[in-house]
Amino acid sequence: MADSKISKQQAKSELKKLREQQKTQKKQRKAARKAKKASGEGIFSRIKQVFSMTRSFDPNIGWWMLLAAVVTFAVVFVITQFLFHWIVALLMSLPFALLAAMILMNRRAEKAAFARIEGRPGAAAAALNTLRRGWVVTEEPIQMDPKTQDAVFRAIGKPGVILVTEGPPARAKKLASKAQKRLRPVLRDEVPVHIVQTGRGHDQVPLPKLTKHIKKLDKSLNKHEVHEVERRLSTLPIGKPPIPKGVDPWRARPDRKALRG
Image 1 (cartoon, rainbow, N blue to C red):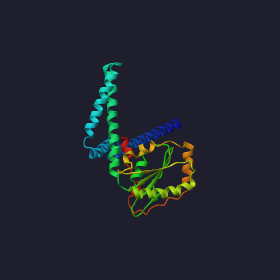
Image 2: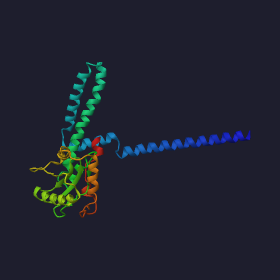
Image 3: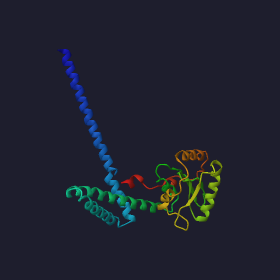
Image 4: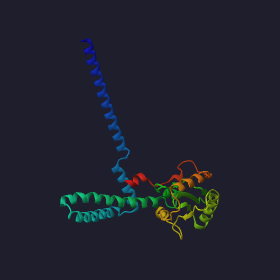
């Protein structure tokens, strides 16, 4: 009897501890949700932030989103109502309309983000960092003029080695030629080296169109050759320019997490 009483007391105490732990975990989760909401990390707060940033660049973004949603809704509804009941067509059209509005906002937000950083040091590196899988991008310039802040950034992909310049065309071309001479000794002759100048002048590529321009280049390497080229070039030292204390201008880039919505 005594043993059974002790076992019952132990079971009650363990159950009490378990309930206390559950209450503590519940309070912690609730506090974490409040902190997340207060810090503005929720999906709706991010969408609101992206919309506000885009509206400062494009005041008519709200009307464009509404137009995209209405047109998409009408098209999907007309198509699906011949296949399903009109209520089903209505339910299917609403998500597509919302998706169309979000896609339009994301594209406009990307343009707004590039417009904010265009012309600043490191803007080309920020654009290159939006490249997806299959690309190796150096965040720091591989060649730079400390006086003029003209710089050359490097990206490696299936088209080969791409040198992206910042600065006036004449100075940027000379800087890119120096960078190309440094790369050639460690590259095979079959590896193409492309020079792309960013800017709004003649024979220059605007920053918002940089990644599209690079992706359209002819493919010359496969996946394994890209890694081999990256391994060879990683042996070359990258001269780091003198950077003042504070925010690193070479790491300036659009908020990709916010752009996804």
